[in-house]
Image (cartoon, rainbow, N blue to C red; front, side, top):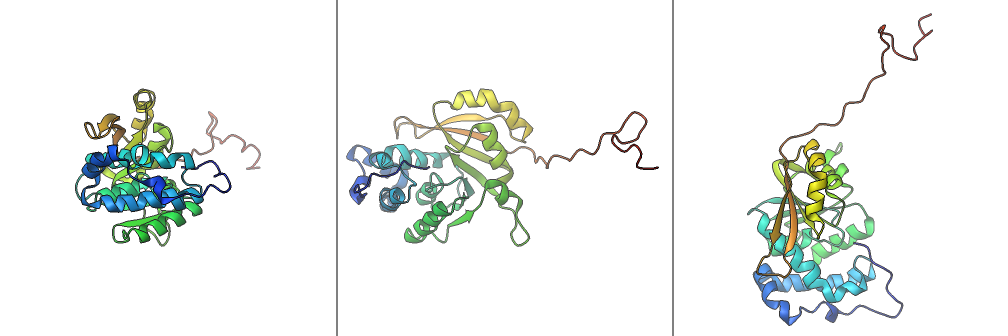
Length: 259
């Protein structure tokens, strides 16, 4: 979540992240006894997050309603004790928020950019979440395939927020979900249109029919809009096509090679 440059001389203040009184009840409902931890994270976003260009300065007065509460509402779609991978985590939205709201979760934050992963690592340490949260620097595709010294990453739930349209998002996220696991994507007003447009593409990627859910009904207004996709089938990598053969059986372009 990149921001515009902060005007010179306009230094962020922790007060920018103060929980508005009208949102206090919703925050207590969503974060419970970890509300103080959520407030500490909001302060990090409003200070270091702004200085490092991860949060726009105009977003700081809206941190709670537009970002923290919206992300925390997704927790109702995540089963108890689940493992979770957050793709394109940026400043930790929604992955770090969910780790705060749900201490039963095991969370991996996947982010390719160094300045963002540095912030995430420091935030995890400062918030005391090192036992339940880890940070992976790399793209979703890299996380899914693994390497010589690292197994592929997989989880019960894969989350994302404001990363890409549903077809591309499914291509990145579904390989990270275990079979039967789910992509849970936080979306905006165009969620229904995305489902209508990309359902066929999602099916080709091994996903079930996308479902739209409203999270935080009667808690936040408006509720958070989420699209869920179950990984129903494991789709292997596309096979490389070999050279075409002519009707006589000889490969095209091979004339004269056997002379």
